[in-house]
Length: 151
Image (cartoon, rainbow, N blue to C red; front, top):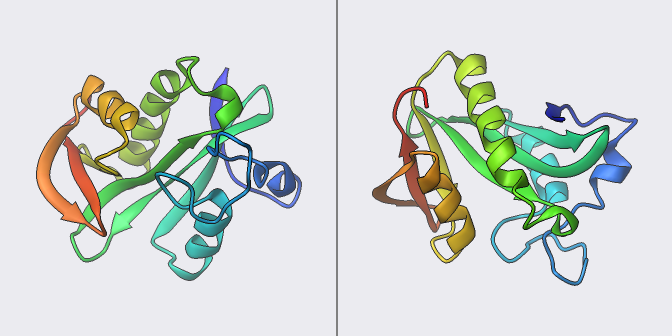
C-alpha cells in the first residue's frame, strides 16, 4: 500500500538515499529534476512548498514537492520522483492519484498544475494519461500542464 508521509527525524536519512540516477549516485541536480535533498532545503526557505515522502510498507520509494505558486496563484505539483530501484513497475501510476488528491484536499482546489521537463517522455506520458493538458507555458525551464477539475 502506497502513502504520502512527512519527512521526519526518524526517516530523513533513509529518504536521502533516494535517487533517479541510473548508477545510484546521489546528486543535487538529477537528470530531470533537483534531488530530494535540494527540495528539502528549498522547502525550508520557501515556505509555500511542501515535500512529502512516498512510502510503500514504511519503505521510502520516492518523493514529491507541491504547493502554491505565488506569482501565478496556482497550486502545483512541482516535483515527483520514484527511486531508480522502483521505476518501471507502475508505481507512478499508483501514486500520482494520491498526490493529486492531497493537493486538491489540502488547498481546497480542483485545478492542479504540474511542471515537467519536456524531454522527460515518461513523465509527460504519465501526466497525459491522467488527463493533464499542456498549457504551452514554460516556467523555470519546465513545461506547465493542467488537470482541470477532479479526475
